[in-house]
Length: 132
Image (tube, rainbow, N blue to C red):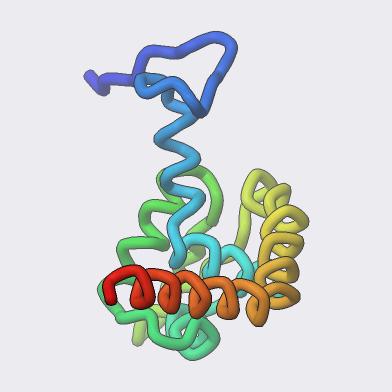
């Protein structure tokens, strides 16, 4: 028998024991966000193509993240009975419903990368000045 997490009603991501928080933790993962973004541009996609598109992701991390996304209903794994085996991934309807918010977040990051990098440098400078 599978065990499910107790529901908290209404769902509250600020509540430690609420399943909504765990879901948010999974969605907020860097690799999940990048793979969701890559799949929203072009799907279905083979794992090799995803690895090329999401620069820097290892084979192991790609596999783990895709499995977790599949478990959470965000992607669908399509296996073709061929030799060698061919597997593709695409967003489910649930996963596709996140495409807009993820695109907005990525656009915000790209639009503000200079300001954020500047803030980091200013912070580091203040820390160094305070240490002297």
